[in-house]
Length: 206
Ligand SMILES: C[S@@+](CC[C@H](N)C(=O)[O-])C[C@H]1O[C@@H](n2cnc3c(N)ncnc32)[C@H](O)[C@@H]1O
Image 1 (cartoon, helix red, strand yellow):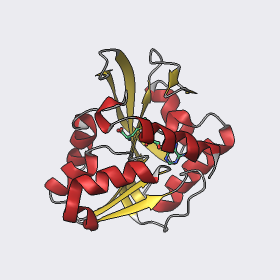
Image 2 (cartoon, protein in one colour):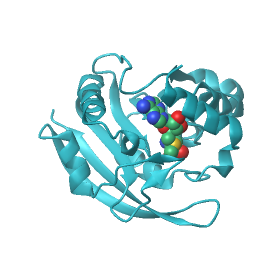
Image 3 (cartoon, protein in one colour):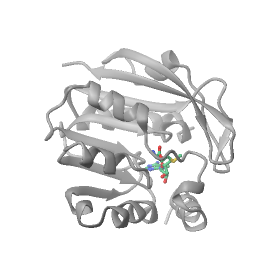
């Protein structure tokens, strides 16, 4: 087990789903972007660093049938899978590090990441991540990445994080990605603190 995996398995071993600072009962902004993309219900959607979030539940509820959830923490994915019961069998669950994982080429129409990219502090990890997006996303595919904004916290879950404006985040992805828009959200943590999140929504060149 790598240090990263141990760290996140430890977090999910100690805390309940609704106790972690990033918890929201529903990822409303993400759902709104995904629905706004106007995709077919069998479009390929991947949630990177899905954790135990309810995004997959809500997407299944809306009728999406081709969902993949990836996380370093097997425990986190197990929580989500158990919560879903039999419906969980419809989701592809992948345990792995997104900077090392192999994904099929041109498999996904929508790439979703809330609060994962900002943990990648090494340029080489970010390079690998972006390379994987280019490889795994269909040409013309949609990318939604949400990170802490310029006024957001400097640390999360005892780890230092990066903070990005929408343009800085788009800059990490480079020329092949066209920025469609960005949005700032003030997320209220379960302990009542406010955290600035920035959502950057792009399309990969067709
Ligand atoms: C702050 S949580 C966000 C969880 C979920 N996206 C949400 O919004 O509720 C970050 C998640 O990313 C996962 N993670 C961190 N680094 C990762 C990596 N390199 N590859 C895959 N997952 C990672 C953690 O295990 C954790 O579940």
